[in-house]
Image (cartoon, rainbow, N blue to C red; front, side):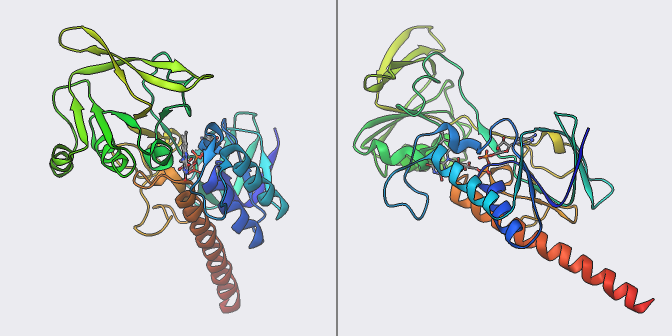
Length: 324
Ligand SMILES: Cc1cc2nc3c(=O)[nH]c(=O)nc-3n(C[C@H](O)[C@H](O)[C@H](O)COP(=O)(O)OP(=O)(O)OC[C@H]3O[C@@H](n4cnc5c(N)ncnc54)[C@H](O)[C@@H]3O)c2cc1C
């Protein structure tokens, strides 16, 4: 077992963790990033990214994350192939984390950037057609379906918001829900039902995503009626699965405050958690925006606040010594 010590320990290597690393390294905190099971984070499972600032042409998600990692390493970040399985934050700074490898990581500050994963239906065709008509993010991919017929699957706030957002691009949006009523807030439902380009298919469960990933992508959905059991086919070129996200916060249960869905709670407008020296950034603390650029932004904020935390602590120590 090896113990790796750093001023700034970052868990997660998506846009939030790597942005925190770039700022942290440039502030002299010699960060360590523990990458986890998905090095580079969620953008590594997508293809075209058109909304990350600075690139006029379409770029590829995996390429963007390689570049972010290269930049973080260039300024002095150490990247670790490991997954954190346990954290000890109760005693305050320094914070300790144990890796799957058996190694231990000790950081004066801890930046949590473990992200969130979209929940999927787990039915045939979903994985193979992902990025070829099947998506879990209307803000990210809606633009690619301009003028096309799309479906949104789900019945909560996210599904209704995604359906409303997609009307910016598509003339024909259908919300498909397995029940006969929605869980979404009433005000969102009112907007949905009043929208001329949105229709709702009630009591339908998606059994399969249809189409050929190598030739044209998604062509439709095979649906089952949850009341009669009858099967039908719904033709569409885009399908957005909007049944929620699961933040990767199991490690912190009982250790840091979270909301009812498991997102870490931070002080409003900051990445500060309840524990001084522990910061949370990116999708793990943000169920509203969930974009690479917002994750990178809050990663930057976490590093700036981490640097201030350490500077204030050093200053207090110097002042105490001078007084003694
Ligand atoms: C298919 C798809 C397409 C998308 N397209 C776009 C787009 O076009 N534009 C856009 O702005 N956004 C897009 N997004 C959203 C964007 O990817 C996320 O908002 C962003 O990646 C969040 O960054 P993050 O750093 O907070 O977390 P993530 O990217 O989720 O990264 C989390 C990191 O934490 C690590 N981790 C988790 N648990 C542990 C652990 N125990 N130990 C160590 N490491 C751990 C993971 O390995 C991973 O590296 C898309 C998302 C998906 C799924």
